[in-house]
Amino acid sequence: MKKVVLAYSGGLDTSVCIPLLREHYGYDEVIAVMVDVGQPEADIKEAKARAEKLSDRHKVIDALDEFVADYIFRLIKANGNYEGYVLGTAIARPLIAKKVVEVANDEKADAVAHGCTGKGNDQLRFDAVFRTSEFDVIAPMRELNLTREEEQKYAQEHGISFETEKRWSVDENIWSRSIEGSELEEPSFIPPEEIYQWTVSVAKAPETAELIKIGFEQGLPVSLNGTKMDGISLIQKLNEIGGKHGIGRTDMIEDRVLGYKARETYEHPAATILLRAHRDLEQLVLTRNELRFKDFADKTWSELVYQGLVMDPLFECLNAFVDKTQERVNGTEYVKLEKGVASVVGRESPDGIYSKDVSFDVKLEQEWAEGFSAYHGFQSRMASKIRTATKKK
Image 1 (spheres, rainbow, N blue to C red):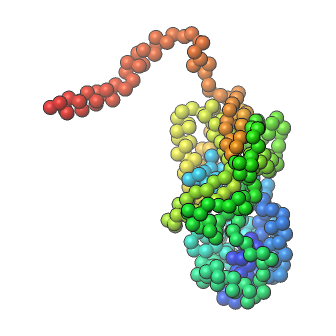
Image 2: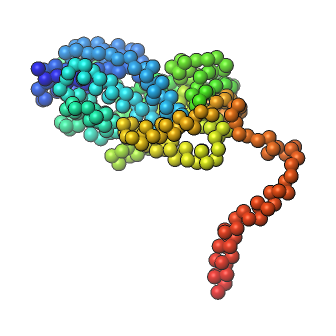
Image 3: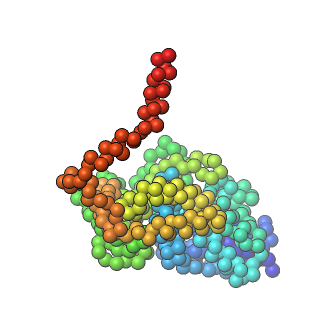
């Protein structure tokens, strides 16, 4: 008996993978594994029903707590962002792949599989984790080079039906919602409002701004408007509040790992608010040198996540550095939500290194700064004089 464990989402690609794994690859048993990282309950229910019909066995793994605690919270501390993308899909894939490998180990399977194509980033994210195991890695969509039309035809021939033909391809978890496909693949196409579910348009956002207060402890958000909240509840609440004000839409041209430029559309209200607030609090409590070095570390961290290389030794090293910097990132951020914009309007921290000596009303020995000022730019001035003298010759 040849056994394979499939990372299953319930969509066309992974649904078609199940009969393909039997017919084209000779697997006797296909186990479909769905990993819950905050998808809508209706989507999980629909996927589960489809898996019951198509697969030999299926499992639904609740990984939401782990996703928030071990992945999203690390992302917040590292200001995770790739070219303006808050890494919602990217940060989830390694966890999903990890859970699939765990099931494969328990089941003593021969192989693991995913439904990614050869054009996107997800294939790399799944493969990178899958290949840390001893299992064969199967990617039917990539290996058989099927077009969307060929997939649909194959699905019809095997009795795989979808109640409604979906115009857009949507990937959703608690951190973000991505929308792509169809006319959205054309860079000049203006997205219709129908693609958005988490956010209202700026035109429909309330005229009155809303002021919220977010509390942080060691770089992590722990309270909203003075009320302590767990990570899941806080993110869900900020998605609701931010979405009501039209906050958290991104429409961008993204540089994929393979080199393609792709048009990507995202919604992420909570991510927008939390990342903005967290970075601002760091500005108050970290030194100039820490901020300068951490900016480079954050970008490197985000690149590794985007590429799916969370098993790289550098990723572990970066997390250790980031964790150390966050020991003093404690305090409160005041954020105004208004017409699609989340603006930090105030902040406070017991660890802030803001000096009141900078005030216009504080009297101190300002003449001490004259000696420093005299030597400030010394080399620059000398170089400028030499250049001027050379030009005159």
